[in-house]
Image (cartoon, rainbow, N blue to C red; front, side, top):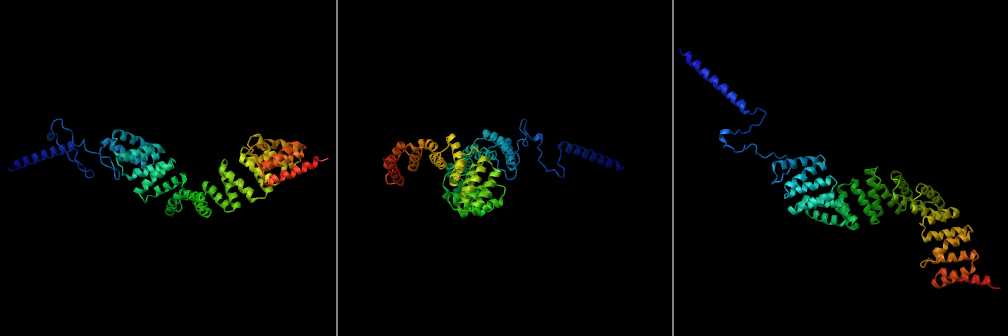
Length: 432
């Protein structure tokens, strides 16, 4: 008859298990792969008190600094901005961080992060201001000092960038980016001697980086160290054969070293890639005149001038080469075009007078030379040529007046002696 108590006990245990399982379901106990979290009983919390779990802070992502005074929502924005920066999304980071700094304006680290975002978004002016605000709040922050340096250098601010980078280098003496920025800013400020050691030290650590080798080569060019420039620029081209600027600079170094043929080849390559590159055109023009005979240079420059008809400097060099080659008709035609454009300097007008004189067109020579010969600062040789052409055109009285004036004004010069000889010649012509 003891079976009844046992049956009753089993029933009680069954009901207890059912109730426990139901309670567990209501409380959502963690599974084996779900971390446990404390459960606060409603009965243990005073009426109206907040749920401690609802106020728990958000977890910090690894390696991300969350400002101490940031609220949970702001901390999340900072975290997302860091992720955006890592992904190269500067504009997205700017949007997030501008809101954070507006809500929490007294945290220097957030301002520094905003400066970084501005730089990535190519807003270096705003970056400078953000970094300055960060340094107001945290004066010794290295990241902000470096940021001001880089932002100012990228803006091309020259001396302000030099000052900012020198300060940043004092705080972070081994920072390669700061050394590079200081070197570039020093060059922009016209201080190549100061730029050189910075760029040389960076080049030792980045021996195949065109962004380092090109400015170093340019600095050597500025200091007229042609061999050093040639070496660095050759390395830059080897590292990036498609880049145009090192080819243009190397052409200049080669030209200065007397290697006009390879310089000419490089300048032609530059013009093929950048047809409107005036600097390369000037270099090619000089190389052609120096490396070729006057006749060959005339032909080469004629081809180049036809390709660039608006280039006045090229047209002047062409006329000069034609004068040297004694191509008088061609020289006269080239200079006449420049005179019509009011782009012919006195020296070129003098050459036009020579061309007309060689062609026997003395009246035209007189007309061309009259204006420049009458100028107070006219060259003695131009006045002498004007007098000679007046004499050749039969204007003896005018020629005599020019020779007498030149003999007085340029006494002791070869031109004055020639003027006196011309006066004796005219005197003999007028003798009975």
